[in-house]
Amino acid sequence: MNILGLLLLVLLAIAAPLVEAGRSCHTSEQCDYVETCYEGHCYTIDELFEKYNLKK
Image (cartoon, rainbow, N blue to C red):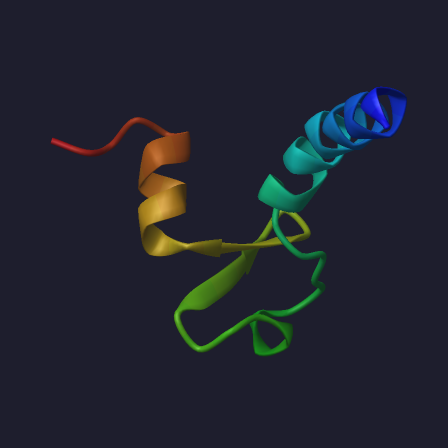
């Protein structure tokens, strides 16, 4: 059982950055209402500000 738990932990560690990267898109219509498509991924305005360190 310990091996299964360790395997699950490793799988989650690998999958987390992929989920965090955002959904793929070609246009903003493919994103949620509060998101925009930028460089092929859906981002909220807050995520874009964090990406470019524009928060004051």
